[in-house]
Every structure is written in structure tokens, then in C-alpha cells.
Image (cartoon, rainbow, N blue to C red; front, top):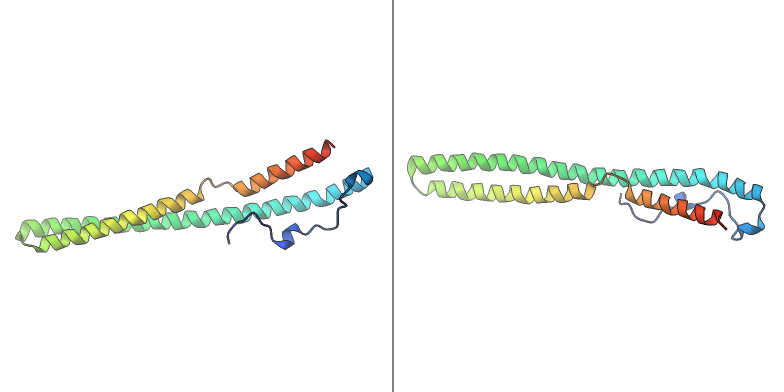
Length: 149
């Protein structure tokens, strides 16, 4: 589930119509609208925050898994390097050269996996639902602005 600036229709459906000209409505009517719409807005913001945090947790999980895979591949690369050193010293023939090539390839794979992991972890930080926070700030500003009219 990707998080976008669009909200699903169920999240934006207001419980009832709000007239375009609030200055023609009485104070009790406006208070009634406010008490009806504020909880709905709060629920929508919580749902947006949940969706955003789930997306970031997914990226963190993928990134940490890639880091774990990189560590395992690097471990095998070290094992192959050790085997290459042993073969090179024991026989002094081309067999050690092939072991070095295998080790280099394994370490190259580990490097690529580490870069993928770093990218995924960076996408997951900061673990704050920034879109929900920005949306809430915008809503608060809109309420303040309409209260000053």
C-alpha cells in the first residue's frame, strides 16, 4: 500500500453537507458542524498516519533483510579468501587464482546488497508520518483562518 496525498472516498465523505456560506448560519449550527466534523477529521488523520507508518516499516524491514544478506555473503567471501590463501600457499598453482575470483565476486555481491539495504533504510527514516503531520498542520491553519473571519 503506497501512501499518496489522495484520500480514499470513504475517508473524505462528510457525514452531511456543509453550506458554502457559513456566515449565514447560526452559531449553534456552526458548533454542531464542528463537533460532527472534527472527530471525523481526527479519524482520517490517524488512518493516514497508520498507512504511512506501515509503508516506512516495510522499507525498514527490506533494508534490514538486505543488510543481513550482505553480512552472510561477506562471511562466505571471507571463507573463500581464506581458502584461496590456503590453496595458494599449499600448491602455488592456478587453483588459488580461481578461488580469488570467486571471493571477489562474492564480496562484490555483498557490496551491492549493502547499498540496496542502505537505500531502503534511508527511505524508512524518519519514522514519523510526515504526510499526516503536514495535513494536520494544514487543517489547523484552515480552522484558525476561518475562526478569524
